Length: 350
Image (cartoon, rainbow, N blue to C red):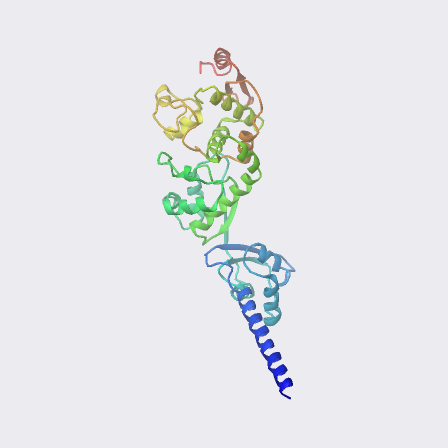
């Protein structure tokens, strides 16, 4: 009899342990993925169910386990899932996520467009028009040293180079030009991550080429921002990128009008001698080498051009900016040849 009693006690103890461990595992499995406040837009399509979106929730880092999420759904059997755009967060946990989906409270989203070649001040202006933040608030936040340190730790392509005191704006050139959809009540941090995530996505496609380059990502973005401004056509970008590399390799000044424009904060078809003489770390007519940082937001075509320049021996180029029907760029190997083309196509010496 004593033998059976011991077996009974063992079985009961074992079951209690299994149930306890299962409950602990279940509670952990449905708990929040993170303590961080990170919003995620979830687009629920027509015909979706709580079970069918399990994988999407996991991929968006909203749940810890698809299995425990599905167990929760089976146990509580929430009301029908409606299609729509929902505001969820990594710090919610399964219970709060399901409650949000069940209520059918959709996120209000807004969109804005960042064209290639624009500047961080333009980005601040675009965002301020569709949110409750002022352009000054945005620009100030993007200069906050604590936030910049967070970005350096978060993104592989952002380094201490953005903390150079000579930079006008630390994140100039780092927001990727694209169309963005964000929550109307998104934090500045979240909308910033959105733009940097897109840059991460683009740069990661060329990570091998970037790592093999003798230039840093900051320097590559700087040159790409110059190419973005100087090139008329996409086919010109790799050519112009190589011209600048040729000048750098020969120890020549880049002498890019794009950098003067940023230095004096005024964009013109022609610049005066006084403009060229402005003492600015962005002015490549005044200083040798690359400027201190990007002077605008390069698109993918310009980024790709500085990573895949088209081989040539040219040291000079000019665009026929006065002939709207031409949009042609002329290249020269010598200064005298360049001056002749300036007289022919522009009507004056460069």
